[in-house]
Image: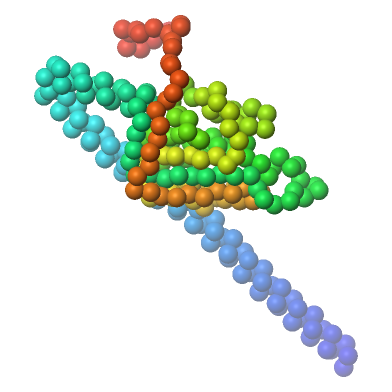
Length: 231
């Protein structure tokens, strides 16, 4: 009788374990299935945005052709100033704040994993750019084609200006696209949260971004009339 009860208990335990394994497997499959779908939707949204931007550029090109010489020159100069970062900008966007983890590092883990590094900032910036950010700044430093983001001891250097956490990244662009890019499942926000890195993103109707403060000088590069370098 005791033996039969023991067998019955073992059978019940096996059934429960089997049921739990099936549920866990199904949940894992659901997560894996949802990630590619989410990625496809994101890429489709970006493609649509690129098509809209292309049409806008075509319309702007037609407008430029119809302008007088002075008006066209002024418009091109304004565009160059905006693209080069030489003028402050404002518009809808987000403010992303990143700070070191408040968690106590475990004995078996590297304490540096709980700190914000230059590569973490780069990941956030790249996601924002990929989502269509038109202008960016980090702790008051405007990002341009010549900007660097690198580790400088316990600080991070941007435009050769050092700053310590928290890091405030400002971006002008479509608020929803920017928020979704940062909060995408399995994306940069999720990877930082593993170590307790504090990341918050605040969508705003108006974000102000300063102009690039340094002077850009080209010592070796010159303008070229060649369309394409042939080898």
